[in-house]
Image (cartoon, rainbow, N blue to C red; front, side, top):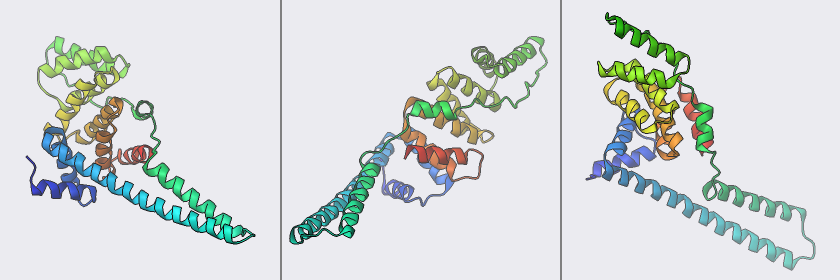
Length: 247
């Protein structure tokens, strides 16, 4: 059930008045709270409606301009060059507004995914635990990942995680699942990192956004990019690029 505080929170979100921590909280609520997600989408639809109303007002203004121009043409035998410039400018303004608000041309999400997804590099040492069989399993899993054999790496990482969670291994596991098209499993891996570990929180958010992009869920991907773009981290520039390309 939503409250007045929730309404205020969502309004501040769209007004860009929230801190980074508050934005993260909003995204978490959207993921977990259905009533809050409905409120969020209603507010988003309201904003789009206001923009559309503004477009209609602009269109009325342009129609008045056109009527005035036609009236001037009728009352004068000579059409001045400035009049045609003015008319052309009015038409251009209308189509720019219409293209922006009513006919947005978005790039293909799957093509963007292919352009921006690069598996996270293996920067983790395969910590040895003592038992020979376990040492062999870990070494083979990390080696398979480096060689691009993601199914073998995934099998090894899953076996390792059964013995205890390791953030680095979980991050690579999510990447394996994402490469192999196991999007649901990849999202669960990255969400677990975001929820339970701060160590690889940023990387997890970036790859979770790519999971959404891969699925075509641009709205959720956009929320992650907005959060990342407001930071000084290495993924901020990529997030800003994707926001511009999807506008």
